Length: 69
Image (cartoon, rainbow, N blue to C red; front, side, top):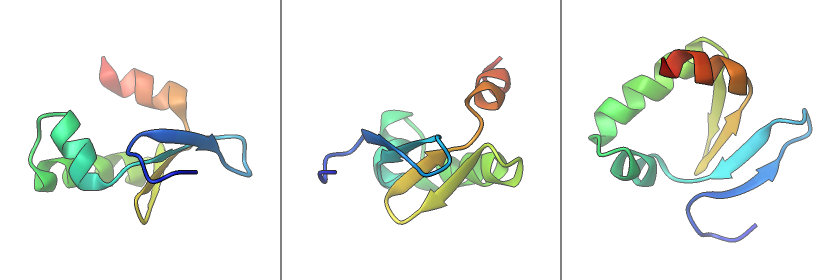
């Protein structure tokens, strides 16, 4: 995968991996980095996502969709 923000792939569990920094994600969502971090913390605590260096693994897409409403 390249270094462009938002590039997607798949992980070994069949989930989706998005290559994006927390700074880039916060900017796209028009949030501060600290606010984005708190939101990501809550998603990770619910096992909806997993964060790694400059990547975000989506573990439960349906769960994320439910949190949106």
